[in-house]
Length: 363
Image 1 (cartoon, one colour):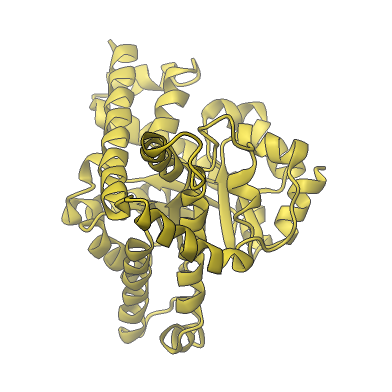
Image 2: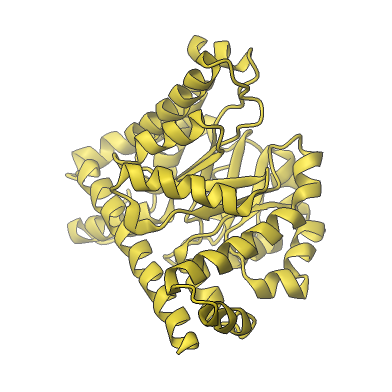
């Protein structure tokens, strides 16, 4: 057992693994992480499934069989991914029950090509929810402007959602509002909300990767280098605290609603000059989720120095970081707009690669 991972868990952070594959499920490596590394959930995305299916022979037989049965390539991908997620949900069922349904969650994402199509996102979200048919499933919906009404609608229909591709506090506030509207609609219809859980996936390392480049163009070893991403997430947590303590939310909580938790995503360090655990250790606070690639998990296990809540003491300084970034000429709105568009494009590309990989096997 890792003392660092234990300390992180005891500080109120739910450790989720940002990876899933049939190999992990069948070799028992995921089970071992649950047993030994305080892993209490899993997130997936198109890139993860593309790597899983292209990098393993365990899918080939199913692909060929489904092709012979007349399944389209897209339907084969849906069958393979929902099957893996269903099995992962079953593996996490004890965790789901032990944590009163808070953790033990597994996420599956709607087709990223639907990121700007509200109606189709809702339709596929409902389809995936029905196909997996497990109580601990989360449907991943991108936090595009077109995704916001889908978040509200799926929540109103009783479907638990993982909102992905959030890069700024204003969009995060809009995401929380969409979730709350869904809860309010459901209660207004006399329906229960106690089984609905949600997380909002706030992307971290990509912020530094983009802003650091801009700072490097201003001066070598700029003093703001590496400060934007953590400050951005800290201010998101401040927004979470404000909403979760608001009279509007307390009224819903009194009727059994569960607050949408912030989830730190993209927590693997891209600049190797930075400490490999920074997007975990510096984002520790109650009611957070941190979804990590296994490499980051191993780094935290090896040398992470958890010191309890590292977020709330950093709120004032994080506001100053943003003031200083603006003074330095960094247009943060332009940065996050680019990152959202780029994130959708990258996931679309991974989805196309996934389709091509499955098609090549079935030919």
